[in-house]
Length: 38
Image 1 (cartoon, rainbow, N blue to C red):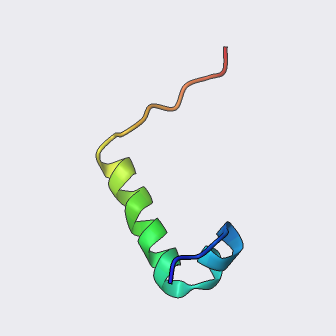
Image 2 (cartoon, rainbow, N blue to C red):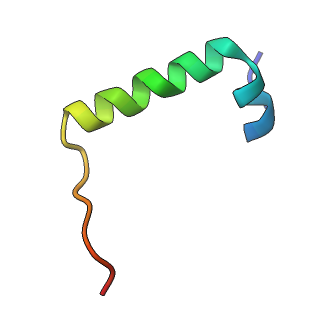
């Protein structure tokens, strides 16, 4: 089932794994640049 909040997602190992995979893909593809605040 789909979690209704972040706490539920973090408590489920399947959702935690999915989040880790998603973040790794975003980092690998250079999806964003880290910049200093103006």
